[in-house]
Length: 399
Image (cartoon, rainbow, N blue to C red):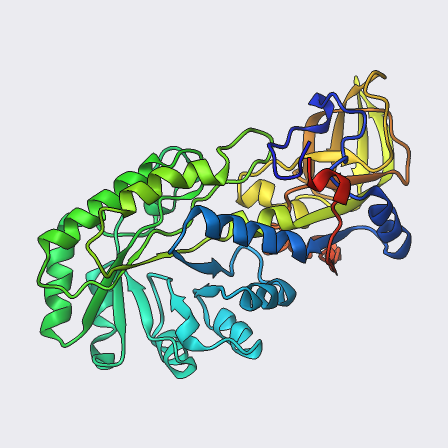
């Protein structure tokens, strides 16, 4: 099983080693050196994901969305690959600036901003901003001649796990009024953008959004269009199968072929690059039989690295580090986090072989929206991040 094929929960796999795609010896060495819980960020996986998406979207300029995972080493690796960056806050501006990234390599995509955020981005050298309503557009009147605006349009997507168009984006019919106001005040409108949602399970909403955007550009032919930003939405596999990225992007690329000549296309991947690049290593610190189930108490939970289960609606694949017999007995178990809060439960019903205190579990696909939203509730520290170059087994790499 290749690490880049569809992942399944370890209890459903026929292979007795549920971590077969990893270099087990490397994992064991990390456990020997570092106290759990900790995350492992694999920079070679960051590169693999970036290049995979680049190949699936030829000619599209990739702006990595920092909010998914903003670790400096990940950003530096993407910078070395020629990536651009999608920023939304002053903190993100200052982070990329500290890493030697220039403002013209970035876009400021938050549709709602304070004036000081506009000023800080311009000071940094980023002059391309996204807006989605009249009130926001008016904030840029003092900066006419200094900024380029991209109008964000809403396309609802019920097939996305996180429907971002519910919160942001204007209706297509509002565009002419917004463009007219901008032009009357000397503000240059250069593009359209949309984001059909994070972890979209079908490309068709994105395809339809591309075609609707193309139609809008052609109707408003008096605008000097330069850019179309197609957002993110590129899915990864957690517990269920998703389309391979080349297949997901194929109809999107076909729709982009309808764009007028000379318009540059942007995309804002976050999850697709970050999620597979990081795992979490946790250990059993206690166990108790409660009713018919064994409860295992782990040293991290939903207030820490597993926070994405609360905020991102993700359920991460989990597997024991020590090899187990797939033909042996499995038991319906509960995995609980370490805090004193009863909501801190990773799984209410997971099939596990019997485990002991000190046993290690590996959480997979844990790069996106995990450590980014982790807290220090109960004064448990956030999991530290260990950066490595490759934790995947080279023998499975070619499978």
